[in-house]
Length: 73
Image (cartoon, rainbow, N blue to C red; front, side, top):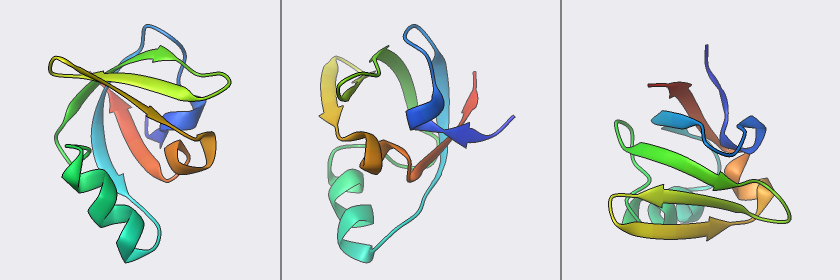
């Protein structure tokens, strides 16, 4: 079941399927490791989305998280 990262709940473990949006946004997220196939664990969804990727924690605005499409692991 594919959904946006912004619609996930804390504790969800997901795999990135694709990233939508302007090229600058895609490049920025890719530089942080948010690429197709990356495994994320959602830590928080409000007021910003916090995700754990490997041993890093990344914060992103909900609008940005809405452009990241994921599936459950």
